[in-house]
Length: 116
Image (spheres, rainbow, N blue to C red):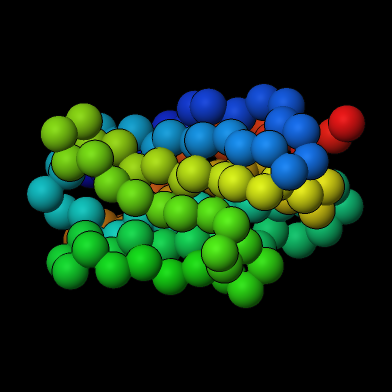
């Protein structure tokens, strides 16, 4: 069993940066990939980025490509989402998702607000 939780959200400035962290616990060795999703206000959730554990490859949604970076710190069982050049459209509740051998688990979500 794997559990994840998000941290690092808050208020960011347009053009500024924030870094989110997704910390995993439990059966870490069973993880296949970790992902970030977000739900903007009054919109459906959307996929943001994926980190694949087997080969350390990454994938990004077009809306964040070149601005966001997903990375992993194996020593602390953490996957980060570095968000640069923030835009108002990035305002959302961000969710960490983990795909493991036993299924898919979600964090509780964390608010990111981009405003002047």
